[in-house]
Image (cartoon, rainbow, N blue to C red; front, side, top):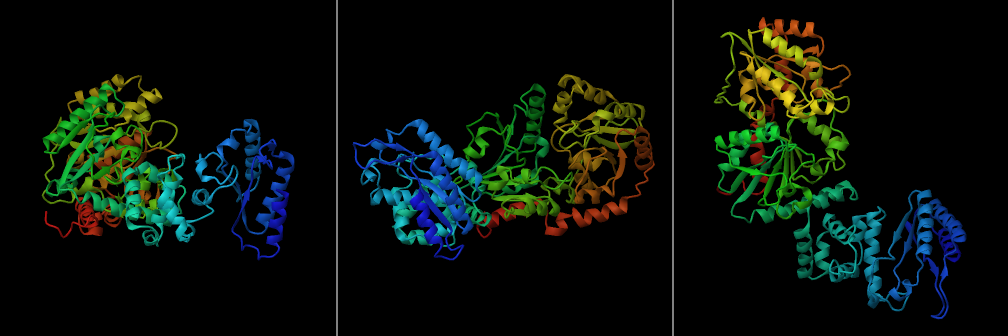
Length: 638
């Protein structure tokens, strides 16, 4: 170590600062014997730790990153290594590395290199040297010391060794799959063609085909943490191109729609575009055993599954634990969270070669800008397409995403297409105690807890709203709760059980002027209503599409994003526990019909929510045409 330090000092004195990018400092836990009869001498911790710190300072002062490297040794030598000595050796190096930023420790001692790749017990032969050089390069890349362009600048021998030995060498561990990382480095670079020039084309294509066939989306999501953003996106573009070519070879492309809550359904139009195209075979996957696998959930999902089937949609009644799901060429997701996803649709079980994953948002983002913790969820990292329902939502996502969301597209909200269509026919069976009754929706949110979203005021006004409805037959009511309200009332103790909440909803349903409604296809209720009272999130924007007045029940302290604030300025705002003001606002706006913010509401809608005007078509058509175009099928006959 002291001698190595002196050599490095002399080198730095004769080169310009910053010329040397990094320094590899080779260390061994033992001073090796001169011959087989002499014993191993353990590394002098105290002396060498001090010298190592000086070595690190020397490198960093001269603009170079110090990298400690421990190389493999012959198994006959390593078997004599003492476990306590090895631990002390590694702990000491790690302590020094933690003390200095821009330093690294690459430990190759345990890679399991075959003995045939050693010239003697301590020196690698030419074959072993070539293999370790490749592996060391990969580790340097993973630590951000080398970049893809550096690896692609390697000589032909580097790639020839890679083609010959990796990833076929079973002796190497694949804890971090460094060798596949190297494949991706090459794929991600502009001079990808160089690979095929430096090895036989058959070997190159075989290597890529084997990696591609085994690749899953969960692995790609992890790569975003180690790849520079531009390289990662270039990699994804190349991979998606290969996937498109693969799925387009099929006679029919299977198109799957998976969602957790039936209320998240994007609407029939998007499904029907694919159903009417003979090149596609669409199917809806619904977990009929329910969100939390209780009886209330099961009944709701089974009821909604029958609604879908009655409308002529192909529904697969899957179980949440299901593995036996046909591979989908295109898979639509509507909710990004990984919890409760059936195994068949987990990213770890979806092969990149077989499936393109797309996302259509199930809601408008209105309660805050998209956070990095949300937009960097694994699903969003690996999407082929992400269709946004508003421009502010898309811009917010691109700004905070660690990959800049390059495949995000503003399409509009397919669930709401029906409100733009002149031939849409809406019907809902309102319970009318009086023929001239005003038809009002009461939509309570689930977030009655004291953390997280916190928009719900249900815990303040649920009893008041029921008593008001009971006392006012001049209004016909539909109570449309968020699906998670069943569970949040139990979590928070507001209701002791699901049965108790069901009894509350049943009381509404027993009124001569009220109905309880849950599940999909609430567009008919929106269109036939005269107004809404609510404290939800996405409904703030969604209800604008029917151009009806809305009373929003505010919860003090809740902040909204700029997009939502513009909508709320055209909305009638009342604090959710001010019952006198709620009563007065219902009387003025709904019963007396004084919708004094109507003109403002229309102007804000036209500027920020009218996606048909922006794109020249409805969202379902836009999404379908975009997919057709990207698959290269736009000029092909159906």
